[in-house]
View 1: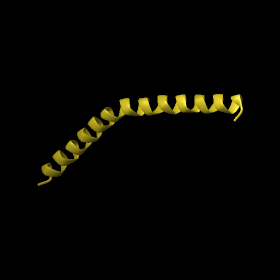
View 2 (view 1 turned 60 degrees about the horizontal axis):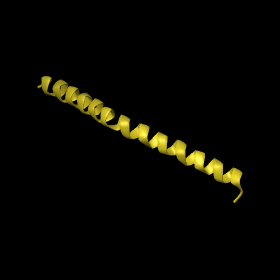
View 3 (view 1 turned 135 degrees about the horizontal axis):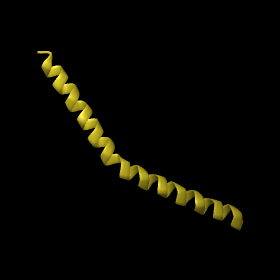
Length: 49
């Protein structure tokens, strides 16, 4: 393995780590959004009856 490909691999791992961290930060917000959406749908459904 030459040093160029080792460096490229290192950079790729760093970028993936940053992406994973960003997704972990966004996950709770997505969860809250989904929960709110489902609550709205349940309310609308109950309103029909």
